[in-house]
Length: 374
Image 1 (cartoon, rainbow, N blue to C red):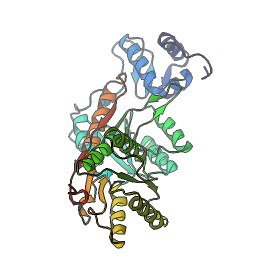
Image 2: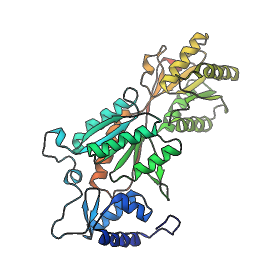
Image 3: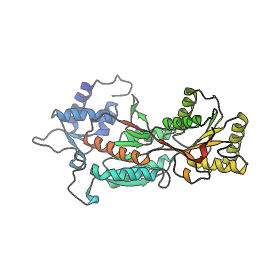
């Protein structure tokens, strides 16, 4: 079957699957998905129905024809998470976790997932990668698959660019359940969603703008790093809320290089000049590091925060350490990790379960940098 042919109906898919199974004896989920031109999620639904009907048996990573009696299941350790009789963590099934940083933002997400792992009857094998190195993320994942023998994967892959799109397609086609952390994506002919748990970044931006409006600010500008995968959602929340609550439109925005980039100083000066000339009195800055660098530059130029320019940061990793302490939107990082592990556990138990996309609301932490104004 090619993607240019009409898609098969569910009954036709299952008939084709059974015919191929009779021909080959065993099949892997990824092989079935490629042959039918559908995602692995769709294949797992078909497998679950056929298994319930007794037409096939599940084996690790795939299926086979029944051999009579009570055939082997997908995996006892996977079908029954949380019921391991061993107290030795090393004996538990492994779940891989690949995150882009081990020292900023992500440690709390890792902790949430690790704390939830025992109840899921699994252990986590952690690998660090980077925010934008597609080859490294793939290499780390391949190691987990080939060496650690993982039965599920929690991952925050790059999402920008053609190489990232190819990586996401590869991840979605793996034989094991995959849950994206703080990332969302669609794959396949029908743009089906990959299972994910993420912060509602647009809502977080809305919290910040509404807070600044309540402090009397009518022009709220925007600063964010071009390298952050969350910048589009935060920017969307800023724009939509400014319009929805009737603030003055078209306040200047700056999508900047990373704060460590040699161009940062020139770019942030350009932004500050634009905000002051435009009468902007408040700013949403994503993330903490950009916000702190902004405040430091304002201080060097004699611009007072919050008197001349109020600032709300986004991440709340180190915002409270700044001078003045920065108000910040705080994602529920621990809950993101915990929820992702719970979601993966349920997928392992029930491969036919509908795909879930979980959005978790952040909260606003108010400190000195955003007021009072009156």
